[in-house]
Every structure is written in C-alpha cells, then in structure tokens.
Image (cartoon, rainbow, N blue to C red; front, side, top):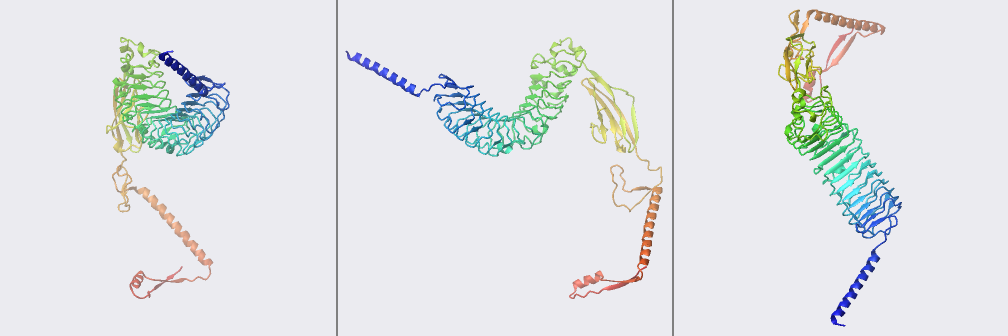
Length: 609
C-alpha cells in the first residue's frame, strides 16, 4: 500500500468517526416532542395549543424559541418553571385558567422578548414574578381579574416597550407600580374600575409615547392628569360614556401630535384644554354629541392636518371655524346633522385633500358650489355627499352634476326683510319694548341687530337680540335712544332695515316737587341714569307719611305713660325723689394726671312722677 493511499484511508476513517460522534451527541441533546404538542425543528417552534394540558410539559426541546401553550387548563406556574428553555423568545400562555404565578416563575428566560398572559384568572401579581426577564419587550396581561398593581411590580422589566393591561378589575394603581419601566413606550389601561387617572403612577413613565384609556367611568378629566409626560405623543380616550368635560388644564404639560376622544359625552369641542397643543396633527372627536364648531377657536392648533368628527350631532360649522389652520388636509364630518358646509369655514380650501360629508341632510344650494369644481381631485372617501333637503335634487350625488346643470341647480335667493315701511318706536322710561324683524330667503337668512354704537347685540343683557329675530329692550332708559339696524344675511347677500327708538324720560314738571337739601348725605343710587344728587319728594306723599309717623309716636308715648301710672299706683308707698352721684370727666382727667387718688364727685336730685 502506497503512502498516499494510506493517508487517504486514515482520513476516511477519521471522517466517519467524527460523523458518528456528532450523531451520537445530537441524539443525546435532542428531546422527543411531547405527545400533546406539534414541533417544528426548522422554525424551532412548539405548539401545544388545545392540548388539555394542566401543567407545562417537561420534555420540551431545549432549543425551542417559540412556545404556544394557549387554550389549555393550566392553573399555576411554579418557581423556575421554564429553566430548561434558555433559547425561548416568545411565550404565549393566553386562554388558560391561570390563577397563581409564583415568584421567579420565569427566571432563566434571559432571551425572552414577548410574554402573553391574556384571558386568565389572575387577581394579583406578586412583586418578583417578572424577575429574570432583562430582554422582554412586550407584556400582555389583558382580560384578567387583577384588582391592584403593587409598588415595584414591574421593576425588573427595564427593557419593556409595550404593556397591555386592558379589561381588568383594577381599582388602584400604587404610586410606585410602574417604577423601573424606563423604556416603556406604549401603555394600554382599558376597561378598568379606576375612579381617577393614576397620575402619580404615570409620572414614573417619563419616556412614554402612547397612552390608551378605554371604558373608564369618569365624568371629567381633572387638571394636570398627565403631568411629567412630556414625551407623550399619542393619547387615546374611548368609550368614557360619562365624560362630559375636560378641565381647562387637564392636558397641561403634554406635547401631543395625536389626540383621540371617541364615544364619550362631550357636548362641545374642548377648545380651552386644546389651545396649547401647537404640535397636534391628528384630532378625533367622533361619536360625541357635539353640535357646533365655532369660529376662530381652533387657530392655535397651527399644525393640525386632520379632524374627525363622525357620528356626532353637528348642526353647523361656522364661518372661520378652521381659520389659521394652514396645513388642514382632511375633514371627516360624516353621519351628522349638517345642512351645509361653506367655503368660508376654511383657512385655505386649496390645502384640503379629503372631505367626508356623506350621511348629512345637505341642502344643495350655492353654499356648496365651491366643492363641485374640486370633485375631480377631492377625495370623498368613496361616499360623495347626497342632496336630501331639496325636492329637485333629492338623492343625487355631487359627482352626478354636469357643468351645464350647475348654474340652475345650486342657487340661493338673497334675503328680503318683510314689512319695510319706516319704523319709529316710542316708549316711556322704565317700560319694555320689542321690535320685530322678519326676513325671507333661500337659505333661510340669519337676523342680527346692530346697536347705535355699531356693535352687534348678543342674546343676553337688558338690550338683546332674540332667537326669533326680534329686538327686546327691557326697562328702557333715555340713553337707549338711537338708530338700531336689523341685518338679515345668507350666502347670497344681505338686507337691512333701520329702526329708530325714542325713550321718553319721566316728566319732572307736571307735578309740584321739592327737594330735601342737606338731609341726605348719600349720592344718587344711579348717577349714570339721573345725574342728580338731590332726592325729589311729592308734597302729598310727604304729608301723609308725616301724619302716620306722628300718630304712631303719640300712641306709643301715651301707652308708656298709662302703663307707668298704673304700675306706680299698684306699688303703694313710693319714694318720689332719687339722688344720683357721679364723677365728672374733668375730675377723672385731673386725678389721672395728679399724684393722689382723690376724685371729687357730684350729685343731683331727680324727682319722680
């Protein structure tokens, strides 16, 4: 045998030996797949779902990375339960009947990234349960029966980024419960029995970026509820069925880019709590009974791009409602009670890309004419607006109109004030007067009143404009006299009618008067109205008052004398004189200034009747 062939033979035998040794070694470390599970050696996955298991199987492959133990009957996890699975990355224990997890049950799973314990029967999580999970990124303990989070419950989860604790029976979260969650970015606290936002506990989450609250029974959001969460970008509040108001500083300290408050009981847009959110891009107030979006109150939301208010009670969006929103791109107000949406509501209609206006009782007239030329590039979200209040256009979509039809279809009629004869109203001082102003037009015009000082009159005050279009002046005063202007306006124009009001002052010269000068030092109660400092009295009234006063005084004195007479007669022997000693004030002063204590006294004698 040549030297070359010998070397070749030794190499072959060596290779066979090494192969046999590797096979023997791998057979020693490989474990059979448990009977109730399905193993995938390629994906290193073990699926034991629906296996009727009451405990975690012992003979799981050591190289398992994905372990599914859902839909079983496991009640307890004991200490070091998974110590034989050091490679495990994903563990799902959802949908069991888990009631107890012992301390350090997950110790040894140093590479675990996701842990799901949802839909079990856990009532409390002891401190130390999550020890030994330095790489855990996601924890889901939703739909359990947990009542309280104790201090330092999650202190070992320093790498945790996503935490879901929805649909528990939480009544209290201890102030230090979230201590240690320095990397947490998203937190879900939904469907709890909390009576207030756990403000103190949330202050431990300085890096939190997304916070979700669902189905809480709070009626108001208190001031400073989310203080020290300066990195929070998304706040989601949904299904707070009793939530009616947000306190003025409830969102103070936040720099949100996205805010959602859906399925609550807000009756107005929370303008004051929102005004400092200058970085807000997305706002969703859908499914709240909000009736109006008022003008000039959203302008501080400089970066707002999207507003969703679906399924509300919107009756009107006022002119200038979105003034200042230069980046406004999407408005979704579907399923409301709007009859129109005028172009004047927007800061710049050219920036608008998406408009949801369907399922509103729209009156297709000139107020919506601005939207028709933009129908080719304006996204109506697949549901173009429908005309519902016009008999001629009822049921037709905007996209159905042709260019030739538009001039005769989307029209308005300018307002006209009825009964235009010149008006001059006279009233005595102190009386109440009403002036009516009725107008017609299509759409129905709004009526406003302008004061003689050229200021619009509001619906409150002594001089006010009523909802039916009339002007009411209560307790008229001379200074109320002047020219008032009734203005009726709609999208097609306006009409006006001046009304002259004359208030006759109290007649001062028709009866005899005199003034009591020097008797009264107080000023007139209403110097702005009368400008007088003397108080007028009628002679007849003064004489009657003086007579009544004299008779009352005489009667009282007479009764006192009669009583004293009979009382003295009934006492028998009565001493008719009395001597009274007193010290004059001058004597007291001189005695105080002197060296002695002697004070001279004086006497006088009084004779009794």
